Structure formats: C-alpha cells, structure tokens
Length: 433
Image 1 (cartoon, rainbow, N blue to C red):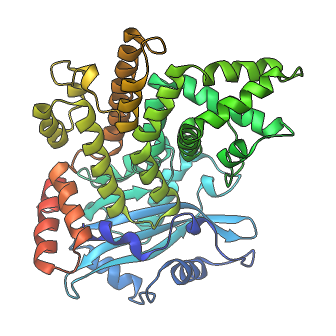
Image 2 (cartoon, helix red, strand yellow; image 1 turned 180 degrees about the vertical axis):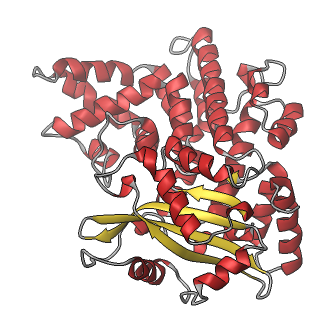
C-alpha cells in the first residue's frame, strides 16, 4: 500500500506525455530504459525483472497503467509500472515493468481489445495477478479504465481501484455547474467568443483569458474545468470593468450588437454577479485538485489528501454537524438527499464575500425570493459535486484510511507512524489480511 503514496518518485503526469525524439523503431527494453531514466528522479532500479516478479508472489502490489506516453516521432505507447513495499530494504519500489501497444496509442485497433492485450502482456510477464491489490490507470474517461478493471477483478476480486481519481475534479466541477449554474457556463462561453472575434478589447478582457491554451468550448466542462474555474474567478475580480466595457460595446451597431447586448444584460443582473462571487469561492478546492492532477507530481497520496480536504470542506458547508461525521465515515450519498441531515438552505456556507454582498445589497436589487433561490442553488451545487467525488473514490478507502495516508504523507520518515498507518489503511482497504 505504501507504494501508492510514493509514486511521486516519478515526474509530473503531463511530462509523461512528452518524451524526447526517438527512432521510429525501438524495442520494449529501450522504451522502458528511456522511460525510467527520463521520468524517475532517483537512480534506475536495476533489480532483474524476474527477481521482482518472484517477490510479488508473496506480497500485495500496485499496478499503474500510463496510457498514451509519447515516444517521439508521433509514436505512443502505454507503460505498465508496479509498486510494492520491499520488506528487506524497508523501502517502497516503483518500477517500469513493460510497454504495451493499445488502441489509445495509435489510430489502429479497437478499444474493446485493449483489456485482452493488457492481460496477455501481464500474463506473459508472469505477474501473479492474485496478489494485485491496487490498480491505477490515468485514462480520464472512466469507461476506459473500467474495462481494464473488470478483467483484473477476475483474478483479484478484492482489488482496490483508484481509476476514478484521474478527471475527478473535472467531473465534480461539471456536475456542480450544470446542475445549478449552467447560465454561468454559457456566459463564460459567450464572453470568450467575443474575446476571440472582436478586434478591439480592453485590458480586463485581455487579462481574463491571458495565458490560456486554445479551447474547444464545444467539449464538456469536465475536460477543461481549469479554463472555466480561472475564468469565473477572474471575472468575479474584475466585474465592474467588464460591465463598463460591454455597456460601451452594446452601443455599437454591428454584427455583434445583439450578442453584446445579451452579455451586458446578464452582467448587469445582480443575481448573476452573486453567482460568480459564490463560484469563485466554491470552485477553489476543485481548482487545487485539478491543478495537482494536471500539472503537479504524479503523487496518488497527495491526490487522496486533497480529496479528503475537498470532501470535508464541501460536506461541512451543506450538512448538519451531526450528519457530517456519519457522511465522512460511510460516504452515504443518501444523506445528501435528506432534508433532516442537510443544513437549511439559508445556513449553507457561501463564503464571506457573498455574505457581505447579501447584507449590503438592497431589496430592490435582490428580493427575498432571489436570495432564497440562490441559497438553494448553492446547496444543490455542493450536493452534486459531493456525489460526483464520492463516486470517484473507492469505498474501501474510508475517512480513516484517507487520514492515515495523509499522516504518512506529512511524516514519511517516522517508521512507527508509517507502519501503524499503513497497516490500518491497508486493513480497511482489504490489502492486509
């Protein structure tokens, strides 16, 4: 289990997609050697593969599948790594085991055949699949990972799958936004469209989309959630400037006149400003998690640590204190549908800036119905996001297990703490029998 928290021996996941140029023909051994040298921070482990396979016959281990690793020259492959705790040395080991060509790595092949290809490669390598304890695949679409997981469970029914972690923040972001605030997504898209097509824009609008990559806004929010989160947070910070800019633009008579007027009407609606201020606050934990997954080190332990923070944060904002511990311990999403367990809508945590705005805004701008509707929408946002996150985290890793993993992350050198926490976490996850 410790190897789950030590995959940070490898570099950030986005760099795993960018290898140096290579010859068009490379054998598997060369691929693995270059992968290990380029992506592993420490010296490459030279333990013979056969010796490692033998060690895994008597110890639980983790299997990591990184898909679409670029080899250069337009070639890609998928890399299988194994992680386990070496009882002799007292150290965790993460080692590249083999390369396998899947359909996601090329334009040929059918996705349905990928699980069979993976299983064939693992079987030929002699991997003892009955001892497989944890499986992690970085393919964001959950349906891709589920196909691999289903095959592996035939050999290891108690397998703990961490395949829900990649893309978790994006899915939660999409669930929350589209359930309560889809108009916010529409407004961001309209303003970005104006930014992309208008010849003259002011500094605030330039800053709004500065340093962002090209985005295809027809794609789901989940696949580009950082774009939307950054846009929402920046818009909330320069709202007055945006209003003034679009008011002036709306006076112009051109092909964009109607769409510009539509943007102006929404920007001058106090309810819309309130929604952006709330989301700038509410989306922050998701931003931190998504940035780690997208740009940070490939550290599953830290991902789980931030997931724990996210669950605690969102649950505390929407659940009664008496129901909070129960939800975190059992992660029973039914509690999120119980009025008796939820905070009254008026007591949902919405952030200091929003509370100040609600106190300062006159009833002419926001009447009692507007305020009540907003608080209900805020509660629904948290409910939808929490349900999505819970679906992504394996049920075997309950609140106590996540806390223990977090404790090991904070103090990995204290052997007594490490052993105690890992045994507790592993026992709850079914890894220690």
